Length: 167
Image (cartoon, rainbow, N blue to C red; front, top):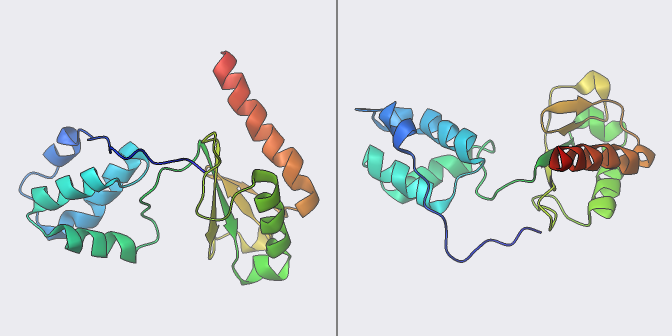
Protein backbone atom coordinates (compact mmCIF):
# COMPACT_ATOMS: atom_id res chain seq x y z
CA UNK A 1 0.00 0.00 0.00
CA UNK A 2 1.31 3.51 -0.79
CA UNK A 3 2.22 5.27 2.42
CA UNK A 4 1.05 8.84 2.76
CA UNK A 5 3.64 11.38 3.78
CA UNK A 6 2.95 13.16 7.05
CA UNK A 7 3.60 16.51 5.34
CA UNK A 8 1.11 17.04 2.56
CA UNK A 9 2.17 18.76 -0.62
CA UNK A 10 0.51 22.09 -1.42
CA UNK A 11 -0.83 22.11 -4.98
CA UNK A 12 -1.01 25.18 -7.20
CA UNK A 13 -4.62 25.49 -8.27
CA UNK A 14 -4.28 29.03 -9.65
CA UNK A 15 -5.16 28.07 -13.24
CA UNK A 16 -8.22 26.04 -12.26
CA UNK A 17 -9.50 28.60 -9.76
CA UNK A 18 -8.98 31.32 -12.38
CA UNK A 19 -11.53 29.59 -14.61
CA UNK A 20 -14.10 29.93 -11.82
CA UNK A 21 -13.72 33.63 -10.95
CA UNK A 22 -16.90 34.87 -9.30
CA UNK A 23 -18.23 31.32 -8.92
CA UNK A 24 -20.60 30.36 -6.15
CA UNK A 25 -21.27 27.07 -4.41
CA UNK A 26 -23.00 25.85 -7.61
CA UNK A 27 -19.52 25.43 -9.11
CA UNK A 28 -18.33 23.14 -6.33
CA UNK A 29 -18.74 19.79 -8.11
CA UNK A 30 -17.20 20.85 -11.45
CA UNK A 31 -14.41 22.57 -9.57
CA UNK A 32 -13.66 19.44 -7.55
CA UNK A 33 -13.77 17.39 -10.77
CA UNK A 34 -11.20 19.69 -12.37
CA UNK A 35 -8.96 19.51 -9.31
CA UNK A 36 -9.16 15.71 -9.26
CA UNK A 37 -8.44 15.58 -13.00
CA UNK A 38 -5.29 17.64 -12.41
CA UNK A 39 -3.98 15.92 -9.27
CA UNK A 40 -5.60 12.49 -9.51
CA UNK A 41 -7.34 12.76 -6.16
CA UNK A 42 -8.49 15.40 -3.65
CA UNK A 43 -5.78 16.04 -1.07
CA UNK A 44 -6.62 18.03 2.09
CA UNK A 45 -4.74 21.10 0.91
CA UNK A 46 -6.75 21.21 -2.33
CA UNK A 47 -10.06 20.80 -0.52
CA UNK A 48 -9.09 23.66 1.78
CA UNK A 49 -8.12 25.88 -1.17
CA UNK A 50 -11.45 25.17 -2.90
CA UNK A 51 -13.38 25.87 0.31
CA UNK A 52 -11.56 29.17 0.81
CA UNK A 53 -12.05 30.13 -2.85
CA UNK A 54 -15.82 29.51 -2.71
CA UNK A 55 -16.07 30.95 0.81
CA UNK A 56 -17.51 27.67 2.12
CA UNK A 57 -16.68 25.75 5.27
CA UNK A 58 -14.23 22.94 4.55
CA UNK A 59 -16.71 20.53 6.14
CA UNK A 60 -19.30 21.48 3.48
CA UNK A 61 -16.81 20.72 0.68
CA UNK A 62 -15.96 17.37 2.28
CA UNK A 63 -19.66 16.65 2.75
CA UNK A 64 -20.30 17.06 -0.98
CA UNK A 65 -17.12 15.24 -2.05
CA UNK A 66 -17.76 12.24 0.19
CA UNK A 67 -21.37 11.97 -1.00
CA UNK A 68 -20.29 11.24 -4.58
CA UNK A 69 -18.23 8.10 -5.16
CA UNK A 70 -16.45 9.70 -8.13
CA UNK A 71 -14.21 11.60 -5.74
CA UNK A 72 -11.26 10.01 -3.98
CA UNK A 73 -9.01 11.29 -1.23
CA UNK A 74 -6.01 9.05 -1.79
CA UNK A 75 -3.80 8.75 -4.86
CA UNK A 76 -4.46 5.81 -7.14
CA UNK A 77 -1.90 3.62 -8.84
CA UNK A 78 -0.58 4.15 -12.34
CA UNK A 79 -3.12 1.50 -13.37
CA UNK A 80 -6.42 1.95 -11.58
CA UNK A 81 -8.39 -1.31 -11.59
CA UNK A 82 -12.15 -1.18 -11.17
CA UNK A 83 -13.91 -4.50 -10.70
CA UNK A 84 -17.63 -4.42 -11.39
CA UNK A 85 -19.82 -6.07 -8.76
CA UNK A 86 -23.15 -5.21 -10.36
CA UNK A 87 -25.83 -7.86 -10.75
CA UNK A 88 -24.74 -9.20 -14.15
CA UNK A 89 -21.07 -9.31 -13.17
CA UNK A 90 -21.92 -10.88 -9.82
CA UNK A 91 -23.95 -13.63 -11.49
CA UNK A 92 -21.10 -14.27 -13.96
CA UNK A 93 -18.48 -14.67 -11.19
CA UNK A 94 -16.94 -11.29 -10.43
CA UNK A 95 -16.42 -12.32 -6.79
CA UNK A 96 -13.87 -14.92 -7.93
CA UNK A 97 -12.23 -12.35 -10.21
CA UNK A 98 -11.97 -9.95 -7.26
CA UNK A 99 -10.41 -12.68 -5.10
CA UNK A 100 -7.85 -13.37 -7.85
CA UNK A 101 -6.99 -9.67 -8.12
CA UNK A 102 -6.56 -9.37 -4.35
CA UNK A 103 -4.38 -12.46 -4.25
CA UNK A 104 -2.15 -11.39 -7.16
CA UNK A 105 -1.79 -7.78 -6.04
CA UNK A 106 -1.72 -8.50 -2.31
CA UNK A 107 -4.07 -5.58 -1.65
CA UNK A 108 -7.71 -5.08 -0.75
CA UNK A 109 -10.19 -2.77 -2.50
CA UNK A 110 -9.36 0.86 -1.78
CA UNK A 111 -5.63 0.15 -1.58
CA UNK A 112 -2.66 0.74 -3.86
CA UNK A 113 0.30 -1.60 -4.27
CA UNK A 114 3.48 -0.56 -2.47
CA UNK A 115 5.17 0.29 -5.76
CA UNK A 116 2.25 2.54 -6.76
CA UNK A 117 1.60 0.59 -9.96
CA UNK A 118 -1.88 -0.81 -9.24
CA UNK A 119 -4.85 0.33 -7.21
CA UNK A 120 -8.03 -1.66 -6.75
CA UNK A 121 -11.59 -0.41 -6.47
CA UNK A 122 -14.92 -2.23 -6.34
CA UNK A 123 -17.65 -0.43 -8.27
CA UNK A 124 -21.39 -1.05 -8.46
CA UNK A 125 -21.57 -0.95 -12.24
CA UNK A 126 -19.34 0.08 -15.13
CA UNK A 127 -22.09 -0.13 -17.70
CA UNK A 128 -20.78 -3.19 -19.50
CA UNK A 129 -23.35 -5.72 -18.33
CA UNK A 130 -23.29 -7.64 -21.62
CA UNK A 131 -19.55 -8.18 -21.13
CA UNK A 132 -19.80 -9.59 -17.59
CA UNK A 133 -17.75 -10.09 -15.60
CA UNK A 134 -16.01 -6.86 -16.52
CA UNK A 135 -12.86 -5.24 -15.22
CA UNK A 136 -11.85 -1.70 -16.17
CA UNK A 137 -8.15 -0.86 -15.97
CA UNK A 138 -7.36 2.84 -16.38
CA UNK A 139 -10.39 3.31 -18.58
CA UNK A 140 -9.99 0.18 -20.73
CA UNK A 141 -12.75 -2.39 -20.26
CA UNK A 142 -11.76 -6.06 -20.21
CA UNK A 143 -14.70 -8.34 -21.02
CA UNK A 144 -15.67 -11.75 -19.68
CA UNK A 145 -12.68 -11.87 -17.37
CA UNK A 146 -11.89 -15.26 -15.91
CA UNK A 147 -10.00 -15.53 -12.58
CA UNK A 148 -7.40 -17.70 -14.32
CA UNK A 149 -6.59 -14.79 -16.69
CA UNK A 150 -5.79 -12.27 -13.96
CA UNK A 151 -2.10 -13.14 -13.66
CA UNK A 152 -1.46 -12.69 -17.40
CA UNK A 153 -3.64 -9.56 -17.57
CA UNK A 154 -1.65 -7.90 -14.78
CA UNK A 155 1.59 -9.02 -16.42
CA UNK A 156 0.61 -7.12 -19.60
CA UNK A 157 0.23 -3.92 -17.61
CA UNK A 158 3.48 -4.49 -15.70
CA UNK A 159 5.28 -4.96 -19.02
CA UNK A 160 3.67 -1.80 -20.36
CA UNK A 161 4.96 0.11 -17.35
CA UNK A 162 8.44 -1.40 -17.76
CA UNK A 163 8.48 -0.43 -21.44
CA UNK A 164 7.60 3.17 -20.50
CA UNK A 165 10.45 3.30 -17.99
CA UNK A 166 13.07 2.06 -20.47
CA UNK A 167 11.99 4.46 -23.25
